[in-house]
Length: 300
Image (cartoon, rainbow, N blue to C red; front, side):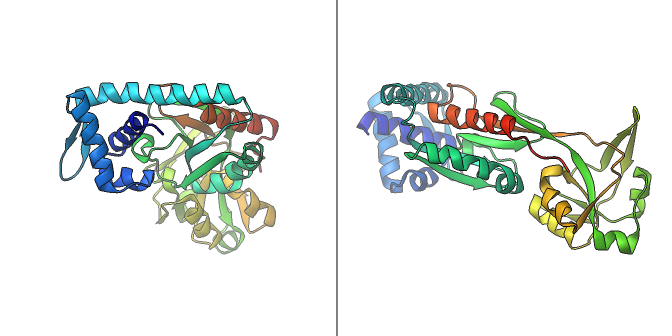
């Protein structure tokens, strides 16, 4: 990498992450080297690009303007190399973040053929059920479930699947089966990460809608943790069909209130706004879109 391109890459990572030390770790450089590179860039340009405090590094107005152009230059270079090498020579690193269970059960198996087809690509997979800041995390693309909160990001729809109410077979044998949404008030409720603040479950049946307010007895910070609590018989949970398909097939978990519908959940591939995504990111997203179209998420 030329010195000037390295300057752009280092500056962009520091500006996005808000940390010299974090940028150094991610780029495989020492922190003094990162500080020196950014300092030399500012000296050459004759302008302050970053404001340094003891807690965070933030771009100045000039830094923000330079950051946008720097990212465009790097994206254009990546695109030019892709065009020159041809469609079968995607290379480099793609940083992708995804929810744990959706990643394990749906996304990662679909990524395997893509990586097989592009042996020069590398993936850095960050799995978390907490919605992360794509810019701060340095992610190229994220797989997200549910509503999209930031309209400045680009997004492609991957799939839509049902939410359902479930409990372990042992729990139902001990506490009985709720026959109507109102019956849930007499049951222990387990909430997962995306439903911790949602106390109202909305059910519909025969064009009629009913909202049930519930108090959670157990809350889990990950989808896998929530399902573990349900399997252990701690209570009734609401989840997406993909989260518990295997458990229902095995008979350890049963679906409840099957005659009632809950709002569905949609999976998207999301990428930071601004410059057009790189060729490798576009190729990965297109692969996922095709994969979900050809082999949809199976319902229960």
